[in-house]
Amino acid sequence: MTARRRRLRSLAIGLAASVVAVGCGGPPPAPSAADAAFLSAVHTGAPDIASYRSDAALVRLGHAACDGFRSGVSYTTLADRLALLQGSHTLPSDDLGTVITAAVQAYCPQYAGKVA
Image 1 (cartoon, rainbow, N blue to C red):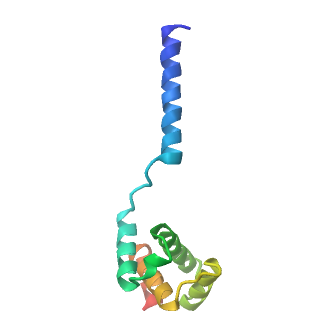
Image 2: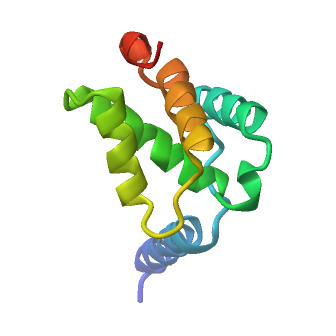
Image 3: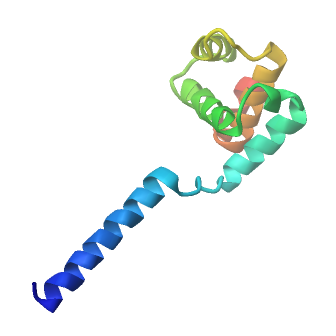
């Protein structure tokens, strides 16, 4: 094997190892500024929420709330749909309201009139 081929092979193996490390075992990405603002508002408004929902699950729920408003549903319909998405372990209605309001503030302020 030529020196050039060995270098290319080493480079390819190194790149493959990097991809595996990032995809499988690397640290999770840092939350965006919007995620940080959302999570801060949720944890302030519902201090016990961390005992039954992870931050990642809350962020997903927040984005789902904005997706629901984008589809044109009302606040009540959105709350009902989000409750269904959560399965048998739904958030208390006050906490769900906090999540929806925080999502609008952080991710989709154009729907502020729907949570007023």
